[in-house]
Length: 196
Image (tube, rainbow, N blue to C red; front, side):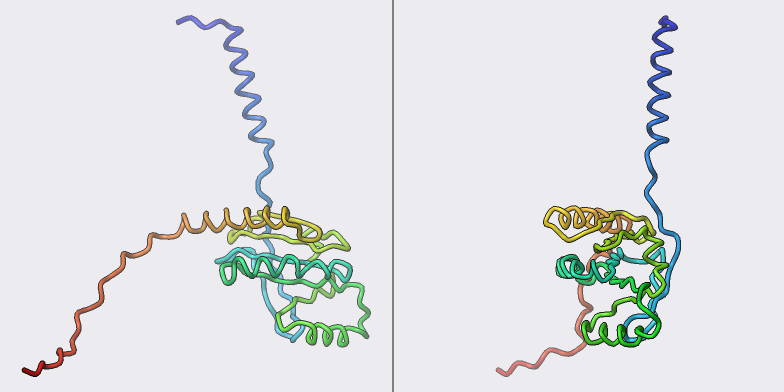
């Protein structure tokens, strides 16, 4: 079979264009750090880059704090213990003298731990956008699989749920197969005697 030079060059150009497109496709963003912050009760909590579950971070300054509940409640209701949810309050503008009072307000306002980012370093590490809640979904391996800045809408929640469901599906497909159910061991208690 004879192949013309023009045909060969067209195929080579197509293959080169395809390879360039694949190389240009962005790799999933990976978060490689970890952070430790104290919550409003003074307990330090660490969020590591790698974990055994999906993590959702809801970062908010005072202006974005009204939008947090719109995300947290539906996520907690849908996923319960299947994911970790961490609220992070950006408090870098609070004067040192007011920190105890602010911590006390958080204690009275929520029984759930809220991580207090007094310096803003954690928020900046996630490219924080001011005046709105910033939602970041981390896969167990540290991949950032979803970001959204702003109030929860049905569409935004559906997209977030889809991303989390996909990661949870990946995790289940990588899990070792479950052991087959075993029948209960034979009873060692003698059967009651029957009366005639």
